[in-house]
Length: 110
Image (cartoon, rainbow, N blue to C red; front, side):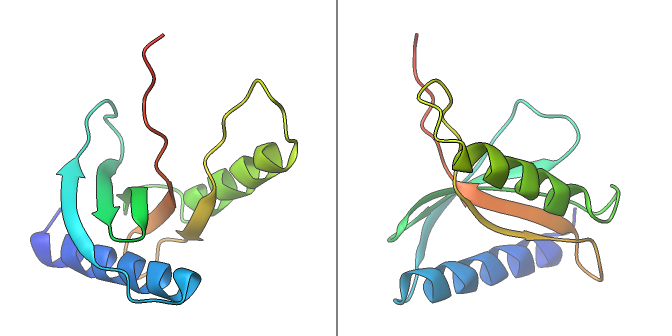
């Protein structure tokens, strides 16, 4: 992944967060996350909260849009046994990689 593409993706996500919160979102820190071997993944720490971002340009063009639809459906179920992140934005692969931006859920020890 080239740095310029990554920076562009992050900038677009911060703009989306600014629109969503009605105030300028400011990226305070980014942390690369492991655990997956298919997608790039980051924790974005902003003044508006913490968000999970993953992206990939070598996937089905609508993969993240479909994943977002599934997450939204599970979120709407209001099941007390499931903790589902709120989806902020998903986009298809085009001149930029497809991506999924969502609420970051803090891991629990259990």
